[in-house]
Image (cartoon, rainbow, N blue to C red; front, side, top):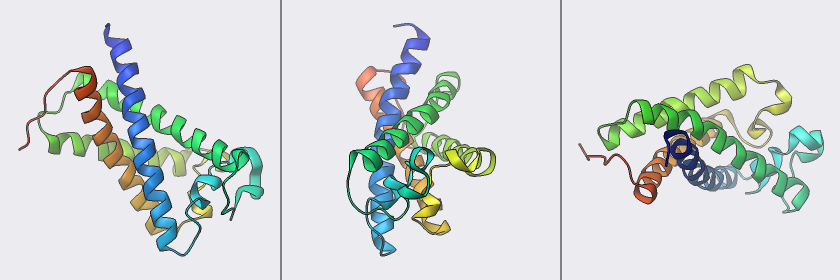
Length: 163
């Protein structure tokens, strides 16, 4: 498999794992704040539905489906430069992989909430406190690290040493 295909396939695996982990964290954080578990995912559909996506607690294709698909695509999007970075600078330890994932998540948070137009933010601000949003990006970092490790296990690649 050529290098670009390997990076693309790794990004798909890594982003998928990061999407699942961060979605679970979003649901848990919302529940801890007394909100509906699906509110953050539904709120992510605000790019399409505007204010109608806010405060929705029920599951439906229009909001939950669009919100999850958007979040999943975003996680794969952020996994692509992460995997490209890892291909150029493979981490030598699990701790370095976690550090690289945290840096990528920080870049994602900065772009999502500091650069992107309001209409295309993740929308979590409609369902979570700032503290929980920081935790959600932390969960994204954990997901990126776990996804990269899973990608290497599935596709072969650099072995990480636990140091």
